[in-house]
Each structure stands twice: as structure tokens, then as C-alpha cells.
Image 1 (cartoon, rainbow, N blue to C red):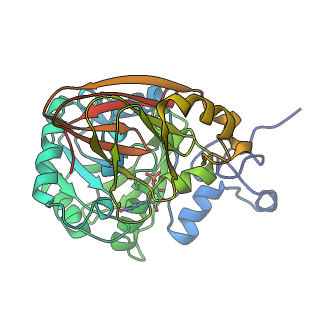
Image 2 (image 1 turned 30 degrees about the vertical axis):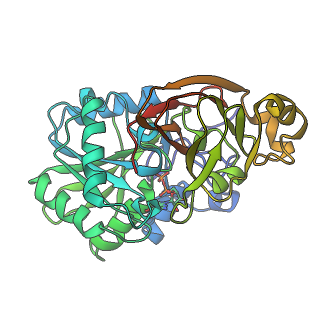
Image 3 (image 1 turned 30 degrees about the horizontal axis):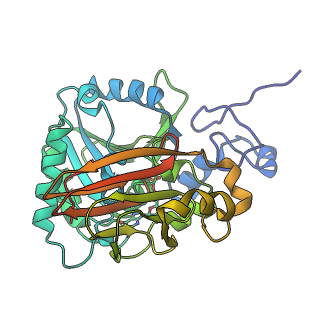
Length: 369
Ligand code: GDP
């Protein structure tokens, strides 16, 4: 008969099979008493929080509980995948609590971009999403840009309340949390985890000086983002690690661009015009004739067209076609969630099609840059 053991720290069911997953404990650690999971171990001994994840339904349940308390909700989103990293239904679930929107990874935007314009753009998108936010702060947690403004805005808006940090996965939430831990926690104040009623997930709590806490919530996994469906190896490739270099392509109609074997962009009909691609420099862009595109994909994906490599291709859902018509004089971005976007500035209009793995969000939006 197998006995189920629970972590003495957070109460989660312990397991020895899957490192990196909830409740993992290495075999050696099982000898010690009390037994705590690796995650609690790291928090206890290194003051380091690692990211936990939840799917949409469980996440919204958790958010609903946040809505019943008085709290400041800090929502962190990724400027590289703004629409993909927005939490749908957030407004409904946090109730009357104020939302501070932290827009991370602005280090990826070209230096020439005016931050005020970005804030205005974000403001318009947020409004379109039906979300009301108390303030928008741009930052780069990794490059330490604007982090002071984040701290200052949190202090200004929390007014004696707990702070809940929410966000999709891969937006930089754990980087932010660990930064906060480094800045806030002193030797006396110990990080704790506490089990959230009604869920099996424990939350990391960073004590504040007035007895309140900054509470980290699990990252929400959105399968409509390319970042959540590719292998670890490819994730490192599709997430840009430095400032985006716009790649301009002058295309005639009936031409196609392949982004590795991950996506495809067809310029079907229209006058000769330019298209600007904003994506990781680790993605190879391959240009071909539209009439050759199907054959090229069939015969050369995973080789000439990479990432993914051939051995990882089976895991990628089949590409699905999204037709896009750009009317005369329109400026827009075609966003492939998690992969990047193509800026279209069409004086004479264009018929386009984007192919992306099934389930990955493809949208057109007002140009960011
Ligand atoms: P989480 O899943 O939201 O907890 O995200 P992580 O903190 O693990 O970060 C996900 C990825 O985004 C990592 O590769 C980070 O290095 C990267 N990242 C985090 N913050 C920034 C940032 O400010 N700029 C850039 N370019 N990358 C960042």
C-alpha cells in the first residue's frame, strides 16, 4: 500500500518523479525530517521563488478569491506578446480592487521608440480589452529599467493592502518576485508559503513592514502562445534576448516568408510593398515564391526551415491558415502570439495569409512601433 506524503512547508503532495513539477522532492531529501518539497527548500534556504503554473480555470478560481479581499492587483504583461499575455476576464475576477499594469521587457523595443507613445498605445489596448487600470508602468526587470517606478507605484497604490502579483507564464513574473525578495526581505522577515484555501497550490508571501504581504500567484498557462507549445530548446530561440532588430522585406505579391518552420506569411495580392518583421534573431526567415511554399514546407521543414528541428517537429501542431485583408492606407501589426509580429503599412492594400500552429493566436492590431 502506497502512502501519500505531504510537504511539511506548503502541504502539497510530494513526488519524486518529475523535477521542476509541483511537489518534487529529490530521493536524498526524503531521508530528512521534516520532508519539504524542493520549492519550499529553495524559498527557505535561498530566499528564491520558482515559478508555479496553473491552467485558466483553476487560475480564475484563485483570482475570484483575490476579488473577495481588499488588495492591490499587480498584473505583469509582456510587451513582446502583449495581447497573448493579457489575462482574459481579469477585470471581472478582481472585483473592485485596483489593477496596476506592469508592462515588462521594454528593453526589447528599439531605443528610438518613445516610451510615452508606448504607454498611450497600451492605454488604448487596455481600454479595448474592457480593462480599467489604475496606472501603467513600463519596465524591464531583467535590465533593471524602470524597476524603481514599479516599487514606487506599488507603494503609492497599495494603501495598507496586500499585493497580489498575477501574470501569464514567461512574462518575467518570477524574475520580478525574486527582485522584490532581494529588495524587501531582511534577515528577520522570513518568506513563507501558505496554502490557498480551495486549491492545492501554495503561494509565496513576501512580508511588508506593515504586516501585509506581497503574494506571488501561479503563472497562468495560455496554450494560444507559441512560447507555451514549443520545446524548451525552441523556447530559448523564439524569446528574443536582446533589442529587436526590425527586418524589412520588400515583397512582390505571390511571395512567402517562412519563420523557421513555426509560421508562414503569404503576401498573396497587392502592389510591391515592404513588411517589417519583429522577432527573435534566432529565427531564420526564409523567402520563397508562394507557388513553391507548400512543397518547400513539406520537403524542408526541420532542415532548411528551422526551428524546430526535425526531431521536435512531431510535437508541433499542424499549421492553420489565417486570411488577413488590409485595406488601403491601413497601418497594422499582424501578431503571432509569442513569436513576434509583422508590421504592414499598406498604401494600396494587401491580401495576406498567416499560417501558425493550430491554437496559436493570430491577430491584427494597431501598430505598436
Ligand atoms: P515567469 O514565467 O513569468 O515567472 O517568467 P521568468 O521570470 O521565468 O522569465 C521568463 C523569461 O523572460 C526568462 O527567459 C527571462 O530571462 C525573461 N525575462 C524576464 N524579464 C525580462 C525583461 O525585462 N526583459 C527581457 N528581454 N527578458 C526578460
